[in-house]
Length: 214
Image (cartoon, rainbow, N blue to C red; front, side, top):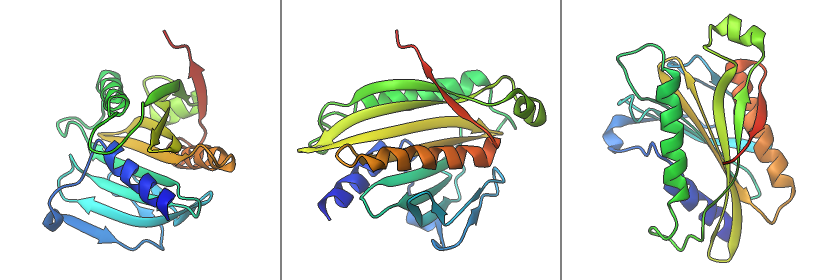
């Protein structure tokens, strides 16, 4: 399927934490839930319309783990869990916010690299907010737990939307990437449902609040 191929290619291009040497990787079953050792999160075999297709663990924590999902409409949804600094048990706000800006910038400047990728446009940014009781329970620094950015782009004549969410979990970064066709209206709902379900695995209750763009 042409759309599926394009989306998978795009997902590979958009991963800032690409995996390396095959001998350092461990592949896990796709049809069972995956419990992540580093964060304690459990990822089900199915989330919204998405089915888990692959889990790959790299022994190097800076490359970390990738949990890949896809659905029957050609959309891809990936979860990346990796380290930024193994010297600390908890990433600072400065560390994860700087990393978010770097990843967002890398995506925004992909135009024309390696594939016929059309202009990448930032559509909006959102704060990932959690209730005060979650802040107290998890001893978070504030109710701003992470950030989300929405993009649009095209590959050839095929238009896509894409979502980036980044938040810290202890010493790890959790990065969510969902890419879906702009031509299938229902796919936005599926994408946002995926983001919500995965984020709630970490924070129980979350809200994406639009941020004003300068």
